[in-house]
Amino acid sequence: MDERQQVTILLAEYHQLYALVVFRMTSLERRLPIAGATLAGFLGSVGVMPPDTRLVFLLGLPMAIVWFLRTTTNHARSFEDVLRRIEQIELQLNALAGKMLLSFQSQHPSRNLFVGGRTGTETVQAVLVTCLLMLFACGFMFSMSGLALTRWTYPYITYLALTSAYLVWHRSAVRLYRYERQQSLSRL
Image (cartoon, rainbow, N blue to C red; front, side, top):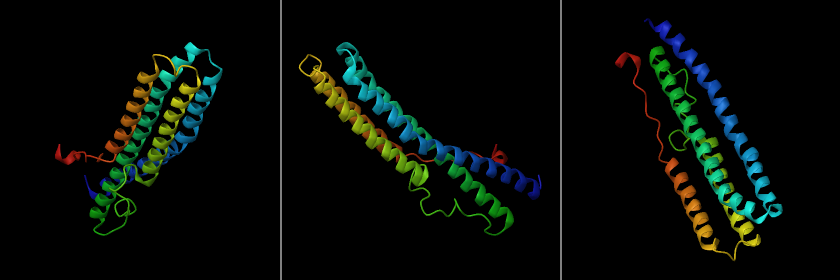
């Protein structure tokens, strides 16, 4: 394959990846207000539920909160993968051209510092804070619901504490994520 064909193929992938960047950024930016408002709305309805329903709901909401953080971090990791692949394409195109033509991702000051770029990192952090606040609100609603003086008190507090610890650990583990470069077709 000659250099012109390689450049054409790489540019086509480059353009498609930037379309994916827009999708990932939009997905990340929409997560917090939409899912956060939904979870807060559910939590706000706890006060009008019958006691048995409240308990089921207060048991299930922390798992939904875990899912909310995990799916957000998944978007951030996927966003990171796209950014790193764009960086590789820039370097390949520059090598084919014999000079620096493209450099936005390959020279970006935050590359390799933040998983999913600054947008991904800030969104995941905001979602973590929202999740922890929601867990605190679950504990508050539990204490106000009349269930606090039952056999469920210590198990529920332990459940919330363990869920909170898991969320913080998961957020910390995301910081360690690194994109693994795919083998090029010429090496296969």
